[in-house]
Length: 445
Image (cartoon, helix red, strand yellow):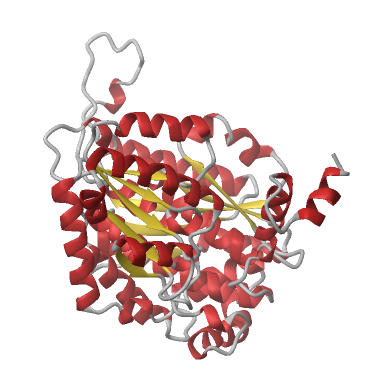
């Protein structure tokens, strides 16, 4: 099968000569450290071999659990935050009909998400929607005590049991959690819920190819085996130490741009279906590299939409950013622009053209303008939106992130800064055990 490709020729004028060759040694060491488990955070490298570690038994089981939910639910709510929801949502949104919620004669349930915020109105409105609906729950949390998903699970579990009865609810609640410990594991074992394991050595933002991502994607009706196969094929290419390795290329180029003062990376798409791929990518790179006072700030824009809001800054603002464009060569559908006899909008010169052709010219024109304006441009090309290509893309970003983080000199697999807001929140809420912190923080108010 054709795979994704990476192009960086529109960034070379901003970099020194022989940029790949001159930085290959450090990148190959970073790759070797990932593969051999010798680098920082090596207790969280289970994702590296994960595509090959997923056996048919696990895939069979996930597909069967997805079938149970599909056959018994109109809606399935996936409860999780961060990597526990973004990967699944990214793939589902990329493959779904853009107006999925309004589709009639559905073959698969609507997949909704909760626990990714503490929005009271959001949760109230979700519960209102679920009243008298046949729904199921996939609850994802390694500990079961993360505030946002734990609140959502309390609410929705109670609602499901009240609406369907405890025995029916037991069949429609699936928990993805730690193998042995944690509040969600204890509850799932006590109640008899079906469970899947989040491997101890896989962090949340790298978990999309575990049941965390695979089960919701399967519930939505997509081919998780093709997704895994895409990841396997990308892994086989990405573990080869070579200047032709696109993961090494991406890691080197972005780090070299960072050294020149390009502190912000904009992940750009010209296909609205890729919006949540960018959201997943933002967490992957931001949480992996943003530490020790270092790191490229990951941001994202949806073009051409955001060209009408952010385009001015990108073209003429401070020259501290570069763009990585994800482009899709072939759209799923074909739509031609009609001729209009009055031509009041002056667009008859486009009549008979495919809309995707116009979009591609907008993409090309934008790239030329931004490069001319001092914005380096990288490009990742997908032949089309499919499970296989998305599997390739996800693993490409993951292994390039590990290489890039090691080149940067940080531990890409921890997230010490994430705990700061939680400690303050618990202190402000007077959580037991936080008495001293409560006194200190309230004195600051």
